[in-house]
Image 1 (cartoon, one colour):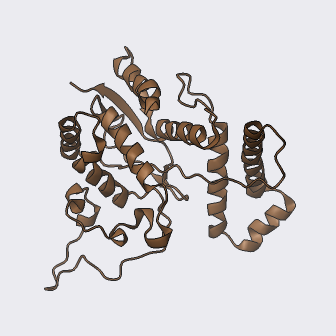
Image 2 (image 1 turned 90 degrees about the vertical axis):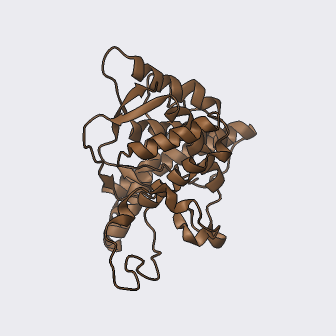
Length: 283
């Protein structure tokens, strides 16, 4: 994936060799990278959000605004948001503007690709840029991941078993799409003799997924059955390629010791104050 070598890695390299302390916000960098790929593959247009100047992400912001406001509807009485929609005020006005901006962009892209006028009922396209994030720093797991990457020559991502299980475990702890009505049928934290295992489920343990059977209902992060996410393979491929290329060359350390990101409640996991890190060249 040339976007990794031409955009992502140079950014980390510059940050690691800078004479001054350079802080990168991963909560900003990775969405930029993902949107560049999504827009390029989906619409044939490269917004270049990952260019060195890190320009404003207008379309990405419009998408995120629309998602956030739609999610906010569930937390307020329907009569309230419907009234605001009718009066075109407040959050509903902002939603209308965000959707309009996205629709106009999509219409223009369709018109340009087809070289003719697009009709008025072009659909609003939803594309979920999912990022698996872990808020805890686990040096032992990191070193195992790096060893797995190097053992596979940094490029044979399909055979990076430990990297795969680490990604699965990270998304179990911090699912990219956290709004999920499913729940366990029973409490697995209590053994038959009554012993309780409190807190273990919050620990990062990639080994949880090494010998798990291939039943998709054991891991509903990407849904299962007829509702299985169509982008699951692409998502894993992208995450593995990024992780393999970045972690084999750089160490990402939280800029503030003990920093713990605060998540906002939206359709996809986001961090309220970002995730600032320092980039260190790996020896």
